[in-house]
Length: 340
Image (cartoon, rainbow, N blue to C red; front, side):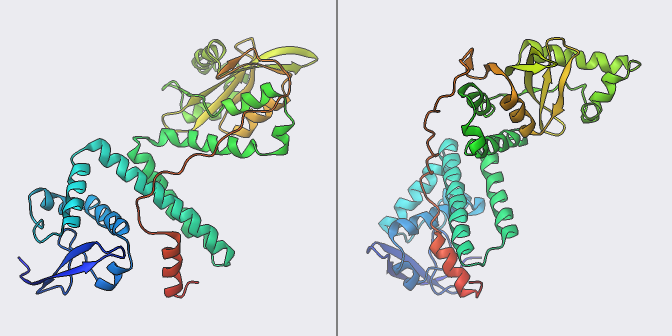
C-alpha cells in the first residue's frame, strides 16, 4: 500500500549538503532511499560523509530495501547527493568482492569502536565484562564468516593471540634466538588434518593404548600418525633425556570433529612418545624453551643457538572506518540512558 506524499522538503548536513525528505501521510520526515526518519536537526549535526555511511550501511544490510532500489522503487525525489549514494550502493551490491570488503570494513570498525568504548567505560568503573565479551564475540564471528573462515581457523587465531602475549614476557626475552623464533613460528604452522579414523576418544586414551600390549589395533592406527610426525615435522628439537642428547619431532594436527589443534611429540624411535597429543600450547612452548637447541622450525632451519634481538614487530593496521557510530556516541547514549 502506497504512502501518499504531501510535500517534499529540504534539509542540509553540517557541511551544507542538501538532502530531500518526504512528508507523507504516515511520516512527517522520511528519507526516500532508506525509509528512515530524517530529522532536520539531527541531519544538521552530521557531516555528509557520516550521513552517507549511515545510509549506505542501512541499504546494504537490508536485502528487501536493496531489491526495491534495484527495481527503481524509492528512487524518485532525490537530491544530487542522494543519487550519488544510490549509485554507490548499487555499485557495491552488484559486485560481490566490493560488498564483502565493505561489510568486512564495517565489522572491523564496529570491533574497534567496541574496544575503545570498553576502555573508556572501564575508567568510569561502569564496565560489564560479560556484555562486551558477548558483543565482541558476535562481531568476530561475523568477520570470520565473511572471510570464509570456518571454525577450523579459530584455534589458529587463538594460537596467534597466545604467542603474541607470551612474546611480551620477560621469560621469552631471555631465550636464545633459535628458541624465540621457533616459538614465534607456531603462529605460521599450517596444521595437518588428523586422520579421520582417529577419534577424540582415541586421543584421550592414547597413552593407555600404547601401554597396553593387547591393544594391537589401536597401536597400529597411531603408528601411521607417528610416522608422519617424524617424516614431516613442524619443529625438531634437541633435548637432553637420561643424560643423552636426542631429537624430538613435533607436529600440529587439527581434528575435524573438535576443530582443536593437537600437538604431538615423538622421539627418533616412532614408538617413543615424548609428548602425547595435547591442545595446550603452553606445553609446546615449554618444550621448546627447555630444549638444548632448535634444529628445525617453520620458516627457518639449522639456525645458530645464539641469543639475538628479534626484528621489530609492527602493530596491525586498522581497517578504514565506515560505520559512523563512534565511541563518543556510544558513551553519549549510555549517559542518556542513565548507565554512566
